[in-house]
Length: 105
Length: 231
Image 1 (cartoon, rainbow over the protein chains, first blue to last red):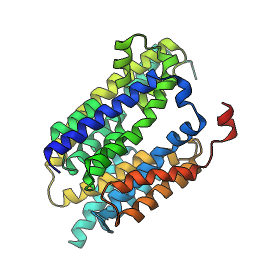
Image 2: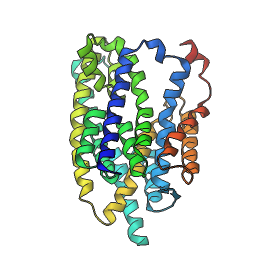
Image 3: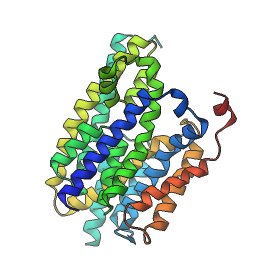
């Protein structure tokens, strides 16, 4: 992607996210506090973040692939289950990914 | 436990700012891995300033997705902040256009949690400003460190970075799945649904579109519970 397109995404996303924040302080509460709206907003992060985990860990372009990233993800899940601090989770995941890369060449 | 005071509110706010700052380093690294330059990473942290949306934007771009899909997923995650704003208005009472415009920039998960936890409106405003300022400073500083650090990586260290990015998304998701989070089992069901939809669509749609499409997994949450309707 060109630098211009990247900048367009960066600026459009930033302005859009700011307007979403501003809307919360500006619109009548009753618009946002509909049960269905609240329900959807509560669960959008789980759906999107999980999709991003899957795409980042198991895809390369339009191909599904298994590589060192899977080892990193598994180690990260284990570390999170043991309530490791964020930085430890990332370091362990990175070490696992690098190890697989070195071992498999 | 004693009632929160001015100093304990400040301590909590600054402590949270320091802790959240570490995520900024991960964001800077993810932005570099996705092909953004330092200025673009810094612009996102300064202007977008909402972690999950920033990660989503660079995550979709890093997966080869187009600008529309990247912006779309950032905005979908940004809708959370609209709901937070509605909850914050009675606490912060931002009067006047200028106060509203400046307050809006710092409406994020952490400042909302800090403000709601404060015992009264005065301390809620303090928690919001102190938390917002410390997170904003740390987040922007560590973004630079992460982006510069990742740009210097080569060889096996690059493979390490590849493994760090999905782990960072998992760490963002994890608290929602933990016992104690409201309806954590339903969150898990939606998360698995989102991941399955994204992987199933990957071979057939342009990169990035599968992430947006995964939002339909919220249907797995089912209808609002009666007590929510009553509330």
